[in-house]
Image (cartoon, rainbow over all chains, first blue to last red; front, side, top):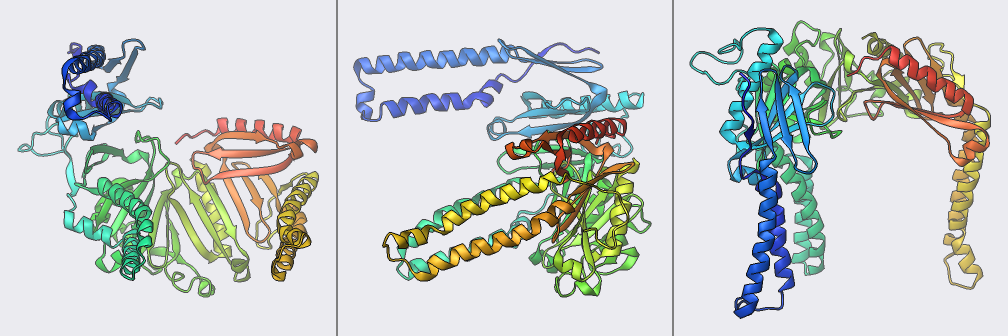
Length: 453
Length: 166
């Protein structure tokens, strides 16, 4: 069933290159700044403007048309092909059985036009992500379903499972692997805003606003100058958080976790369970009374290429934490996974957690009871933090390196710290201020485990 | 300066000549800071009205910290060392803030060899061992260039043999 060559949506070049048209208009306005409107539209000047303008537009349109004409894709039984470029031709292909995940992204302009882009995550060691842009949103979803079905079939050597066992029931005949079981349902806008309001940057921002308001009321209008950079910084942070968490849903598919989110531009992302290097569950100080948590992961090859964590759950309660963890790290190496998770997120030495000894009390009066670690056969769990609490989970096979630290205050009290590093982000395991003998044991044990596999 | 409770591991110390490199670096830094700290004194000598504490305090502070750093240089250099174990590389450093980094050979991504003008003068180099995690990076300064070259080859070979990938 080797399909024919197909073209992308004709509006695609415009979505890529709408800036060119905006730029053209901008250039026109800056060059005719001194003219009034009536002067612009009279006699020979109008003729010239129209001629030059339409010539420039024609050039752009020709380029758009050529770019559209030369961008083609084809789906065969075993491969996906994407060709593009007229002078510098690029021909990309991906073996369907190696396609791990397909993300659907919608930049702002594409979203306004109802278009979507497919990003192929292929396990062939290449750095670049294969993109197919743009298709109608429904077509993009259909194509994604077809390719993932074929990939699934190719890997398991059978026909595509009609309604897959994990992916739905008979009354839910959506493409397999496309819609999985929903585990983090859309975070309500009110809760999301509330959760952001209770974060430290918001509180600092509000305090600053209050401070400047008081200054202005006291007649010091010059203080307004300080407001602008503060607003810019805070606004940037707030927008980024909102854009990352708006309309957030996560579902369980047979390859891993699938998340979808976005305010201005929407994105869908798959996080195959095997790509997760480390998991961090954090509870900002003011969320703790509400029992809210946030989950981030270090993951590799999500097409971002950035050395930063990926948000997996913007805000959720303990039950959601358990469900997400069950997908990200199915095997914590313990029997009572839920109970151990509970201990990891609270204080106490149950289930074999080792905590800081009492000699750490003077250096960390607030946190010493909380900080501790547990190493199971598969994972190292560490927890730290005083007001805001963090629990991080790093599978032993993902450890890239281990460091051991001891400062002068710690040495006097017989304490030491061990940090465990993984790739794909800044999340680390941090056994802070533990007994120096235990720290050494942990250090040696972790290095052996890291080298084992 | 082995901590009492550390397991016996044979560390290869860095070259004693590295002490001279650190000493010269210390000298250059101290001279620079001292010149900056002596600016008020110079102004005072040229007849500018300068508060007395501004003349006296900065040079004293600079000299104090510099002497303290000088006293620590020898111990700092002695504290530096590395050990090639069966499965991993251990690098230790620090006197007041002690640190040990362990990189399993299988996680090693690339080994960088670099040397500044001072290090080159004493025939020394610096090895940086990188993994996929930015924070798990081991730096071994002050090893003789030949030894550094050999160590690098050994590390790369061990890394290829035990390669795990991600």
